[in-house]
Length: 318
Ligand code: NAD
Ligand code: UDP
Image (tube, rainbow, N blue to C red; front, top):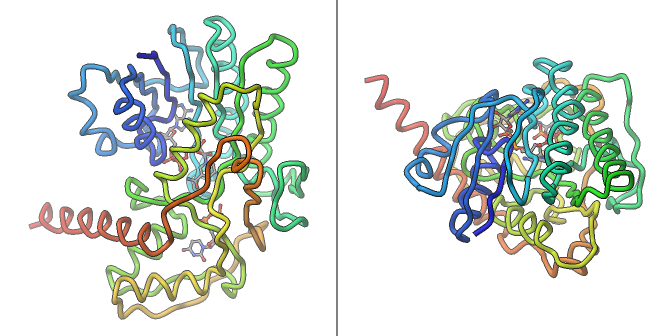
């Protein structure tokens, strides 16, 4: 049994990760400030004697003894990370520094949840880890993109200078149950709009592409990366290379939900990447990993989750 700290553990990905780590017999400390996380996401873990919840903001120092740290604390959806941009960049810089200090003090291995956003609006397609990216340093997405880039720098410098045991994963668009209803990302927006038969809002002309990975596949890869016995520290891309346009994605959601929704077009937010697809050759080689859940099955279980959430809400209203 390992003592493992998961920051951002009450969020979408973090809650699935906490559950998996508990199932594998570990003692899990979930630390979260509940900015975008929720108690509902971890409700079924609270009664587990090997689960501990700490309400804390990683911008402030925290002292605990653990063997592993998964650092996921950071809002991930554009509306949420732009809501308080200065706070977002502090979370990636001060917060990551605090978690690296913690890992250094107790000689823990630390895994940083980095992102495909480090590639910005990529000029190399599909994206490989050796590509340095095309990021606007002064735009509305910069608080997140540059924060995450600096977090990778901090990870590498603590590793080179202080021998901290690190792992860096670059996560591409991931979806599944426990995404917040007000998250604002495309998967939850389209599913909720379709279930309510409301207009589906495509930003731009819908020709931009994304590649969507189901959360169980991602979490499996994160745990493999954390526990890899070789000296492979990353960065490694984790995502599903199956790429599609946002317009095709909207049509797929309408089909899977049997919805009457119509597609409408809204302005494209600035610096919205035109295309994104991970090259996962490195993850296949080093982690013997590739995604297993196809988009239709992953979406059906996500749709079911949101159907339950919406029907619970309507019962609450009665
Ligand atoms: P999420 O918003 O659901 O989860 C983030 C969690 O971190 C929330 O529980 C939130 O309350 C918590 N948090 C935020 N700031 C904090 C702070 N200062 N101190 C303590 N807790 C804080 O997002 P997610 O999709 O689960 O993303 C988790 C991590 O994975 C993030 O670091 C994100 O950047 C990264 N990531 C996610 C995706 C994706 O597609 N979901 C893609 C790339 C990277
Ligand atoms: N998008 C959209 N409609 C929405 C939400 C998002 O067309 O209601 C688009 C968005 O402009 C982007 C893509 O869908 O091109 C993915 O957006 P998301 O916010 O999920 O993640 P990103 O990959 O941009 O961080």
